[in-house]
Length: 404
Image (cartoon, rainbow, N blue to C red; front, side, top):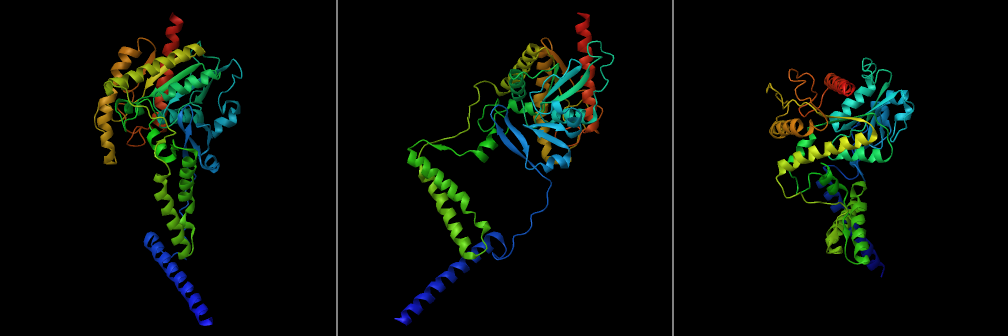
């Protein structure tokens, strides 16, 4: 009897040892290091931002840690960026909706995507608008306050929706500047059968965050969620023994295989509207025009002056001599040269007769030193030149109003 018990114990030990060795081998095969070793230290990176789903704006950005604000002197509030120095000077204007503190301030809201965001942010940081309206009777005794409503990655109608949302909340503005162009080119094409009015990142957000709801019974929905959580919670990478790793991988594989069996029909939590049945290019231009017309109406209802600016791009210049440092961006030239001429034409024929429209595509024609990348973004010099062109246009608008 003792001999049988001894053989039984040895058999169990042998099975455990074999399982451990198999786990060690599997870990080494998948991770190229022994399971018993400490994982390599990840490289130290500055704090990052993540994309968050927003119920009205599509998506916004939020820092992974508050250290990022300290690291870059940028404050993130509900997806919008504020210069830390501006926040110290004007704490009452950080976070929207803001009050009008007195009648001597000139509240200038800038809307758009990344280029507009950078322009607004640098205008806050460098106080570029201080004193620029001293020779304008309408504004000469008022202090310009730049409020940044632009979010990188956005395109119309998202700036339109942001303006409408904050107008409904009572946000006061004296001037509304909509700076767009580059991201709006994406409205002229249909990607992944997604309606071009949807945010550019909608497909990515759906793939990253969506956990479709099972349409079957309550039991089926619970079972589906159980297997999804089980597959994610196994996390074999945390194991430090082969037996643990092998078991965790086995459980992870089991749950992943069982997920499709948890239910038949599922419904995504993300809306997925099909594109309209009309010419894609015409539809994109119509959307761009109509979004701006609506922003002008909203601004008028707020008592604000509205200015739409089609911003410059290095791919759309009289001198076609831009050479990208990364060849992959050459494809952007094709899309820009299809979209921008349509925007210029629609701006002149459909927008300019009804609202204040500035075609700024030619203001940097002779300059390539004002761009900071192969895409579309301006450096500090380019941003200042653009904001000063906007200031000049606002002065002309004010002069026309005074003449009338």
